Amino acid sequence: MRYQLVLEPGRADRQYWRDLWNYRELLMQLAIRDVSIHYKQTVIGAAWAVFRPLVTVVILTVVFRGVAKLEADGGAWYPLFVLVGMLPWQFFATILGESSNSLVSNANLVSKVYFPRLLVPLSTVGVPSLDLLVLTPFLAGMMLYSGTYPPWQIIFAPIFLLIAAVTSLGFGFGLCALNVKYRDVRYVMPFVLQFGVYVSPIGYSTAKVPVEFHWFYYLNPMAFVIDGLRWSLLGVGSPFASWHWLLSLSVSLLGLLIGLRYFRRTERTFADVI
Image 1: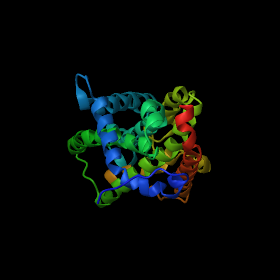
Image 2 (image 1 turned 120 degrees about the vertical axis):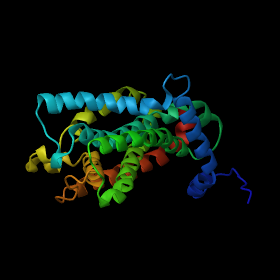
Image 3 (image 1 turned 180 degrees about the horizontal axis):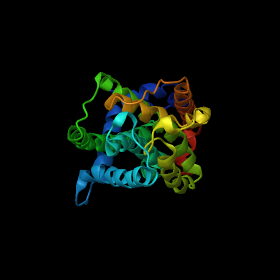
Image 4 (image 1 turned 90 degrees about the horizontal axis):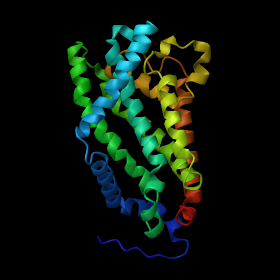
């Protein structure tokens, strides 16, 4: 069935979500374009998806294992323990970083053509998803090398990755709308994401965090995601050991609702301000 777009006053608000679905092919094209640009004129191409987290794993292993003498939960091989923590964090951080700058990066498209602007930050999921796919065989190789076999709860791994994607998009919606008016956001984000590596349980276990601080610790939504993925892939720890995981989910949901609401409220001004 051919879709016909009629521009009339108030239509964008009344049929926004329908338009979002009807423009799904544009979403795919934007994602494919981002992937092609991301690896264009690179020497090792998609291997950067493995190289970047691998370097971080080495650094965190030296700092937390070599210097701080920390151990992984359940006797897991420490580099593998760190890599499984780095995997969802890189997924989250890449989506958040790209989505927060997506509208400014697509200023010409946003200012000239009508389409639901929400498609622009949504399309940024393509590159991190490909990076995740490229990194998966390397992760499987490390698990095989260390003699680690995934437990039955591996079936829940996609759910935790979905939570990471939804959380990053929720914050990304609000930040990309804010970035249209205040370009400082692009300078703040790298610092925030770098800081997040150390406040998230990537190089250490949640068990090392005193229980009395868990109410504050779990305000970081990635704490629950990282613990959940380790539980799913390595069978160590438990993301549901206490009720505090509900804090992380609440922050994720609240971030999505606030980010989406702010985006929709300011969307009609993007073309004029950008």
